[in-house]
Image (tube, rainbow, N blue to C red; front, side):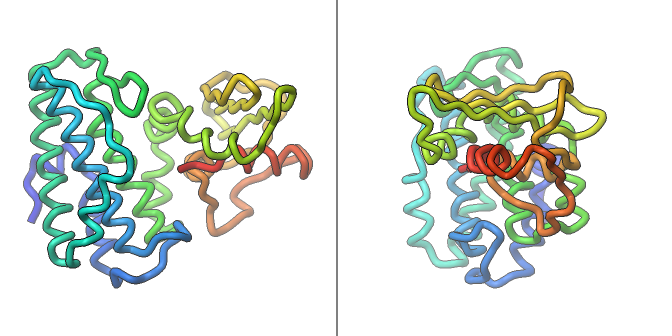
Length: 256
């Protein structure tokens, strides 16, 4: 049973837990290289690292963010040990996030993977990871579509995570000194998400709708596209950009 604090801080944890428990650890997922167990390993490492970096900042001894090597110890655990570690790390993150909310200004700047974020980012990012990776397990069920479509999911993906989401796709495009890719992802009634890749790097921002969209979709699909995923039903997105532009924009949206 989860504590009320976890439910308040990470409301998406319970649906994620239920999705994991409904499947075998070796079941496949929509993240093609990962099984359910791999997703759980990744989430355990996420919770641990978010808590470790925030706790170190609170203690006055900031640390660099570890890469995905942080997952290695969890891959060596039994399924039972891994499950206990996951729940423990989520509990710890909840405690540290509460301490940060109490002791830090919400505008305090903290380094995370080479960029500056603020204290609320740490719990919010774990929430996004729980939503996204639950989709990896379940696909487009009602819970996933509703959670992915929340406005804060788009804002977090663009503002807090944006540039790293474009890095892999931009590298794969091999644009050269003169190449450029630009796309507009539109959900009616909201700001567009504008993505650009060229010799100067990758950029992503929210902007007022202007001109034709490269891809138009519901909000949930747009978040999936930003993270390099695809909805099961391709008729949920639409484009009149033409195959060459569409291919490049979709390649840019490679996610992690």
